[in-house]
Length: 330
Ligand code: KG4
Ligand code: ZN
Image (cartoon, rainbow, N blue to C red; front, top):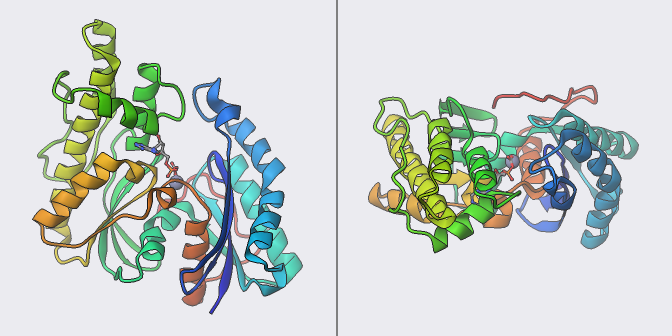
């Protein structure tokens, strides 16, 4: 059994976790920065980087203490090396390199997207390759065929906004503030999804790509018309976005052929309506559906430690001069 220390700092969550190769989560510690960014209505990269510096090292100490472990007992250090806000990525990666060097441990440089992509296997021991993954986060909206550790085939991506970004912009437009996703989900529960007619971009198109910019503009027009309640616009937005997700995912399943499961991950996967709709699609297609628990969908270090464990088991370790990358396609 191997024990992996995972570090995450690519956006606005600082996190450290200890996870074993047997899927035991020994500790997972997280410090959000919502208060620091709220008055700006979104994440300010420079403020985020400074906040990561303040809390990353204490969080590592806290995780080791919660697990009752010392650095000596850790087998490898996994840190997010990108993609993300570069100042933040550098904080976690440099901390990981320092711990690896000081402790004489191997470093595993983890792609944040791979963290999301493999997180369902931490939650569900039975999930085998290949699976079709809908990865929906603040920065990405992709359909990936996950064929193995390090083997990802991208079937589709967004041609403009990521879905999480569209949730955040909708929240801002409707005055719900930051962070936006959970606020739009709550408002959508109160609203009528049929009250505001909104477009479903790319619905029915041959390639399973996504587009959300037109939907976002339609939300702004609906708001500016003054004819609709904010809760109804939120409900209409969420319903339109989900229709797009289901149509595009159905198309990707057709292209992918035989898969072991339909899987969803990333921050938007914590949305209950998104999960329920994908579950219904999987049932219709007669394949299993896997979604990690909501806390494992939004950014955290347990998924980075787990991706580190999977890579470490495959002999994939990295040199100490591995660069931090703002952009790093999977
Ligand atoms: O995966 P994540 O934590 O960070 C990135 O890697 O981007 O995803 C964050 C995104 C944000 O855009 C946030 O608004 C969205 O996930 N999100 C949600 C919900 N919770 C978080 N979107 C819809 N419904 C939610 N409940
Ligand atoms: Zn993420």
